[in-house]
Amino acid sequence: MASYAAREVAELLDGSRAATVLDGGRWSDGVWWPVHSPADTRMVIGEHAVSSPDAVEAAVGAAVRAFPAWRDLGAAGRASLLSVAAAELARLAPLAARVIGMEVGKVEAECAVDAGGAARLLEGFAAQAEAAMAPVDLTADPATRPADAAVLHRAPVGPVAVIAPWNTPAYLTVNMAAPALAAGCPVVVKPPEAAPLAVTALLERLAAMLPPGVVNVVQGPGAPVGEQLVSHAAVRAVLFTGGVVAGRRVLTLASETVKKVHLELGGNDPAVVLDSAVVDDTLLRELIAGSFSSTGQICYNVKRIYVHRSMYDELVDGLSQMLSDLVVGHPFDPQAHIGPLTTEAGHARTRRLLAELDACGAKVQRCGRRASSAAWEHGYFVDPHLVTGVPPDAPLVLEEQFAPVLPVLPFDEDDEAVARANRTEYGLGSSVWSRDVAHAEAVARRIEAGNTFVNVHRIGASVGSVPFGGWKQSGLGRNHGAYSFAACTEEHAVIRFDDAARSLPGLDRWSALSRKEPGRV
Image (cartoon, rainbow, N blue to C red; front, side):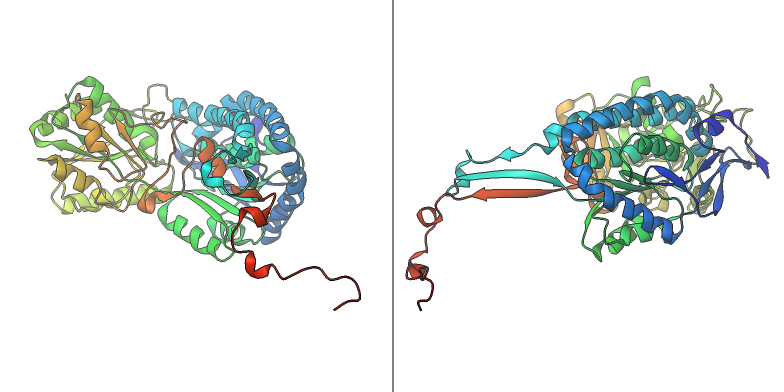
């Protein structure tokens, strides 16, 4: 088995290993699993610890001990520390991006967004902390009467479990951990076992810059490590990003101790191209970027396109021509648009979906060009595929494929397009495409999804000023801004009556009650 002795991995981690982190230090029980390169599975790029039950218990215990002081530091004090830590993460971002490329297989530009975005998120949530945690005085609201005052406080729940996905490991880990930390909650993070190296290194640096026990990391698979963490009675909230099946398991386990749960799960995002759209290079490039970025492995990538029949052939021909220039290569190949899939399971699922398409009579067009940098026989590489003639109830249409395989289906009426877009049990993102904005927005309002974009659908379209999350089995709760703070805090209303007897009716039947003098009956 070859070892990938990359300078970046060795520099970012201690000996190319990602260890359990608790109380600001490192700990290992001596069990290590290798991390293989998805671009060449013969290469081992590092190792991660497998945390024992004792390690998970210790990490949660460290968070419990750290909670009172971290909570009492106040939003401004926490924000100051987090802001300094964000600058350190920004300094490490170029190095972390390279390691993410080795772990995940994303091309360099996407890894830079992942690692650099994590630092910006930490800085952003630190800046929002005071406003998000500030008391809200409701006294002036007429509905507050007859109370003399009512103030709504937001309080941190306590230790928070963060379980992160492998497709955007640094960004999505910090997207959950940062608001929890800013709110006053210590965190116990379980990085993804498929891509634990960069995110663990960043969290280790973060832990060293904060009080002991505020940031803790446990390593290993969802069962048993993640399950023990989610089930722990001292963990008061779980923030999870991942697949639907795992999300259901998290919800079941968390229900046993009745804790807050935020789930950002899968998506099967439709793009609806209306008859009022124009098929030009801009539309084609946007659809390709929205579908094939990160090799199709983004929860709110375009997963299926519905196009009005009058422009169906034009759109398919345009996509086919433009996809012929898409390059599949090694993630560090500057000519590559996409790299390999990240996991063996994803690679096998993609092969199954393509085999099923052959069986149902769909037309499957293999697109793109294979760069010489791609070790095709040793990596999880997949050609981009454009699929037409596929039945509307085929697994490729109804499932989340998480691969560079894109079905295009025609429709005749807007009602038909909306019904098909809403047919799945997913409802994360979606998009409507048209030169007629009023037409697009009218259709957009009928789609069952947390976000519907108009004339765009890719990373960066979900802006921080609006909530992000899913309907149906795409998740529970919302993040971004104040919504992220809501996931790890509780509302505490303090209501004051200066004279309850004057303010509230119904005291008459208690009027005979009075305090007796000592010794008298």
